[in-house]
Length: 363
Image 1 (cartoon, rainbow, N blue to C red):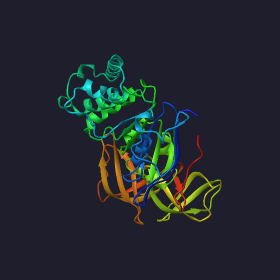
Image 2 (image 1 turned 180 degrees about the vertical axis):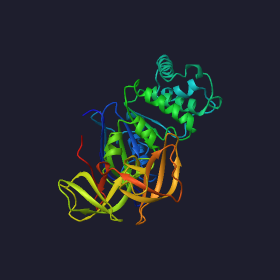
Image 3 (image 1 turned 45 degrees about the vertical axis):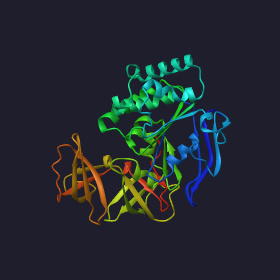
Image 4 (image 1 turned 90 degrees about the vertical axis):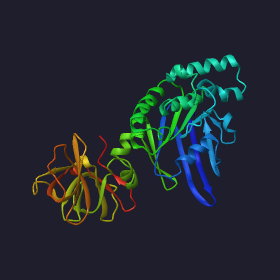
């Protein structure tokens, strides 16, 4: 099938395994984000696809052709590095043309490819400048342009925005979103930034502990995490996950928190682990601050984070469990206050002893 297929990719460095049998399918023109903590294997996998690392086992197939046995220049992929890797003594035009000249592409064809790429990236007026005369965002666009001129079937972006300041990162993120509509190729981007992944990707691949934890569209990752790691890793702030026990219930699970509070969820009981011990997960938007004694349970405020239109209230239940709630931007809650928390049981998630996630039935 066309697109990219990774089959049982394994890699170890000096006896330490960094990829433990990774399988992944990427559709043509799909934008995939690799998201995960440092050391989870995502950059190594990207470099294996690019040909900058070799796998110990497995196959890399692009558009029905196995490419892991080919040199990097013959794979039909182009990589954009975190550090732009532009030649400081060359102009933008020369930087973008350099790889094509090495491949002995005719001069007239090079000129046309560079001009087209510059027009796509809106950097035509920069072609005669050198990297030192440009901003970080402009240099990043040049690095992307150097990849575009190769007309690859797959773009590989390694932390492409991490060197930019916050305002420039936001603007360049918008440019990347627009660019992907103008190039006829798939994109795989490695990032630590959840906002980048959630904004740009068709699907997110979450890595941890040498393996893929979940592959899904952004909002499915957020609203139906495969396990407790994904639930904690994706979302800012992280999902509250606290110990609970299954209580007697009907078709949907009810749980008892450590302080004795009972919550009725919309998680079907069919398929839940037989053990009574579970963890319950709640996003801040599923927990609202209210008057003491008026909600599901009471808690003591530990911190109030004011974000303008809303506030995040970090609190602690009587059994010591930490929980994050949402309140209006004008909240009157302050550290040390006793407040009520109204918990929406229908929005709760359950996690088994092995971390597997259980969620309400899909709409």
